[in-house]
Image 1 (tube, protein in one colour):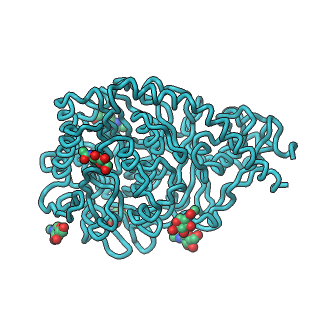
Image 2 (cartoon, helix red, strand yellow; image 1 turned 180 degrees about the horizontal axis):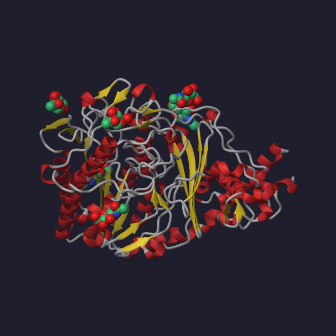
Image 3 (spheres, protein in one colour; image 1 turned 30 degrees about the vertical axis):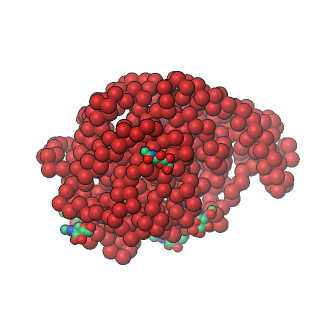
Length: 585
Ligand SMILES: *[C@@H]1O[C@H](CO)[C@@H](O)[C@H](O)[C@H]1NC(C)=O
Ligand SMILES: *[C@@H]1O[C@H](CO)[C@@H](O)[C@H](O)[C@H]1NC(C)=O
Ligand SMILES: *[C@@H]1O[C@H](CO)[C@@H](O)[C@H](O)[C@H]1NC(C)=O
Ligand SMILES: *[C@@H]1O[C@H](CO)[C@@H](O)[C@H](O)[C@H]1NC(C)=O
Ligand SMILES: *[C@@H]1O[C@H](CO)[C@@H](O)[C@H](O)[C@H]1NC(C)=O
Ligand SMILES: *[C@@H]1O[C@H](CO)[C@@H](O)[C@H](O)[C@H]1NC(C)=O
């Protein structure tokens, strides 16, 4: 019975893909219209910080970024990364693909890092290469990937850039002794200089080169702030010690009275979250004080980035090319400090800032549409007038009025391997290590009309379900309440929690192995012929039997990488034309 349904499902998916492609015609047509409207392909300045939070208010402390980008551009307040870890997140960003499709899922080999990026063939096939082929001059300075080192930087060199000057491990996060490596030259140590001063000089130099060129340019600037400081001596086999970031001298005294926002999830009296988080002890006063110091250090370190942005914009304004330049500002993943009693780290922090300024971008506007990092490469293609690639797992975001269509409501979230705790009290992993293993999970975040939900399945098969409308700080895991008698369960959109979870689990089943259009329109995989585009549509009682019969997302064991055999059922059932699967079979 199951087999028949699965085969029928596969046939139906092909049909769905066709019909969706025809729906996507209009953005492609507007791509051409858009690039014709500009005198030539626009320039792109892309600034990406490291570990910058949105939820902890960091963007309230960067006045130049507010002035140049927030006030002169659009703030995408529902922007998410799909993997909250730098290297997987950056590879997804520069390829337009979910981490399960890049299989670069970690910061180090065998599952991630620069060697894995190269091994997977992306060095010949990623954004800067595509942009060069489409007529751009491309430049990059700062951190590219993890495990991009003083030993492997030339085997091979990173492709796709006319000019590059990369930070290299093990000095990437060494604020006062960074190593940069320019084009095909050997690495250069910058002992005694502050990494933000170094990158500011390099970024302005590349901007001058780019402005002098005949072709439009793409310049990416990736400062390491506000990431923690790590010197090579802080890394030993099997452990790592990360201390608070080091600000520029002139910012050291800033924000003396500022503390981590004391939201309800800061060091809460009642524990919350999955078991390993739930088991964390209440933080004592010395740890809380340290966390506040850590937070201030991050804000201070960000001041250098704020000034860097000001310098770049000032130079662009002087060049007369501002009218033909998009400026994008974001980070690779979010961060937390003391929330849910956790030490400084990034394990589930999917929210990051995204500001975009440029031709036709609304000024001082706040955009609510759900957008993700895998949408950014498709967005750059759109802005540059390049037709989208079939392997993009995202779609252009509504940067300009032409793109203001109805967008999807989901974010596909995935993570494999360890979380890494930082700071003086980071030894919370086994044996007092900073590494907390088994942080492998899959989740879906859903933001629709009248709902805001988060559902996750961990590799030990623990589940979380949060209703963020009533519980914005995720303190009350509703999943356990499904065992209550049906009538007493919390209601989601007028249906019982069990019914809502049945839908979200099936959606997650699609998303965890989606590719291309099925990542963008996942409900069409479940309902190729039904009028279902949202959770609300799927909650119709008519589909209760269909969703009740679905296989569930689960794990056979916790693995540190994307090992399909560990990840349970892969294929959902498919509904037919208003007739649920059970009746149809
Ligand atoms: C940048 O590199 C591309 C690809 O190699 C090349 O076609 C283009 O001429 C280069 N631009 C400059 C300014 O050298
Ligand atoms: C700075 O880095 C260089 C290598 O790039 C190293 O030789 C030197 O010892 C470092 N200096 C300090 C103070 O750690
Ligand atoms: C965020 O920062 C702004 C500017 O300093 C401040 O007014 C506001 O109270 C902060 N919010 C929180 C939650 O700390
Ligand atoms: C506070 O907690 C930390 C981390 O558990 C511990 O190392 C430290 O000794 C504690 N400090 C005091 C004063 O109890
Ligand atoms: C992590 O998961 C593995 C495999 O599921 C298990 O053997 C191991 O005990 C877990 N480690 C911890 C610290 O929970
Ligand atoms: C991902 O990479 C790992 C390490 O090379 C490999 O073992 C695994 O099979 C790959 N996963 C998939 C789905 O290809």
